[in-house]
Length: 193
Image: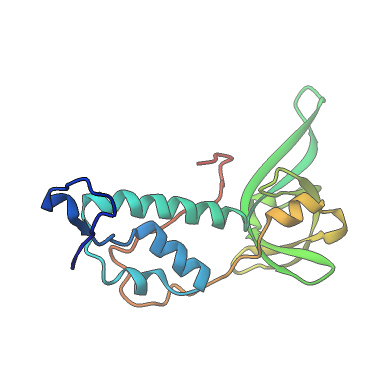
């Protein structure tokens, strides 16, 4: 619907200047509202007909969503001291992305692939704040090769505690997912972005 605004001063306006178009909602704002309310993005966006103008808004919103998800991601690094062919000490390192699953009041629990970290003497976790903390294997599943790593809460700085977030896990069992946008997070090869 169109609305007419009447000017308060006496300067004459053209009729075209008096028409005010109703502001259309912004996709990015809609996604932010859904995230704040804890709803499903697909439900909120089902009424939208996407065109080239609002695709850029959607990707900007997804980028912000990725930034929020990154707070739940960590890098799990394993290293061990070995000897090379010249009998010199060398560190052998491997790393994998992990996700912060829970805080049990004593330690943070992190889920990650265990395979690259097998036979490593030292396990460390690097949080989104950059803090690196020693970790231990709490439990693992030999069938899936997933492990839960534990980091004592007392070892985590206040700055890191404020910057991290426990991951909210959902379900991929939602039916037809063809054409649904996907956000990939983590840095399994040490790359960011």
